[in-house]
Amino acid sequence: MGIFGGVIGGGIGMMLGGPLGAMLGAAMGSSMSGTATQIPLQTATRSTQELQLIFALALTSLAAKVAKADGKVTKEEIQTFDHFLSTALGLSKEDRAAASKVFNEARDSSTPTSEYTIQIRQLLATQPDRLRDIVTLLCAIAFADGEFHPAEEHIIREISGELGLSENDFQSCKATFRATHGSTTEDAYEVLGVPRTATDAEVKAAHRRLAKDYHPDILRSKGLADDFQEFARQKMTAINEAWETVKNERSL
Image (tube, rainbow, N blue to C red; front, side, top):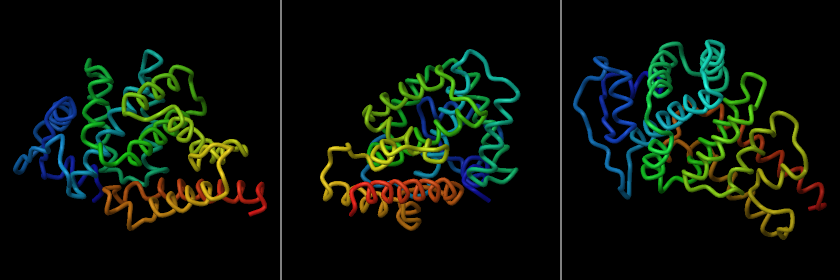
């Protein structure tokens, strides 16, 4: 049983408080059971289970807000999100059913997107790479229907800023997403998170850091559930391909 079925709907009953906690409680209703655990906003250490729950809720709630960016959420968009969870993230039918409840509640909620991002930024303050992963996944989800609508790009850029990420971070997230849809040399530098004017030493250091950060064991220790390992594999592929592009250009 994966993160959505096991943590959100499987009887652990963690309560976050704030807008995410309210949304989770409304979405799961009576299926929330067990002893509730208050997860504080600021803490030096979090359990892997807590980090997995936060990441899953952040992604799903923000994906619902992005889907609604053009004024409506169609049946096709819901099916597209479910298909994305199945193919890109490898979630089981049970997990996707739990995620769907969270998605629908966030979609229908009048809570502004900014209230979710404020809480997510506080909860993942020590995990900036996970914040960037959320934005990258939002880009991929938005494009899953074959079109990256300007309204979707606009709200994802806003979300990125509200999460405390820079414009350079946002462009890097977009470039990582584009890496699977035909990328350029400029994209390669953005995937690595360095400007084209970076020195050879800076480029090499950026690749080493990213390769380390996206090692499966490191990701698990930082709270990226096994459900998201396929995304991590794709991310690592994009990083290595970007490195090869830059390395060849510079004859390193």
